[in-house]
Image 1: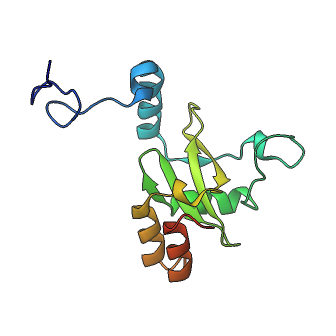
Image 2 (image 1 turned 90 degrees about the horizontal axis):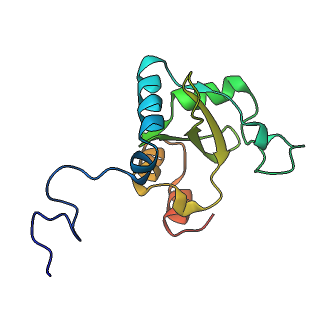
Length: 142
């Protein structure tokens, strides 16, 4: 049987927007996170897995909570993530930590293709990365 224009099969453009997989699997948690996000500003909170002695996760590229909060506040929002560049020139991605007070943790982007092209363009336009860095990231090189 062929998909019809309004069936939503294959295209996903007709009718109401599709839910993300997270919203389908964890509807209550997503709802809680959205209500938390709207009630309080984002707060930078380093993840323990990014501590040097933790044995797992990557090292935290952000030198202090103050720097982390400034980067989070001035970052580029793309969906639930926030992107910015540290003082040492590393692109970081902030993720919501699923906590009741809207905490975010960050990690260095190690795969250039993990940064959306629209974010790269904004980082370039804001002078946070150079044209050469922009071109490298767009080509998937670091």
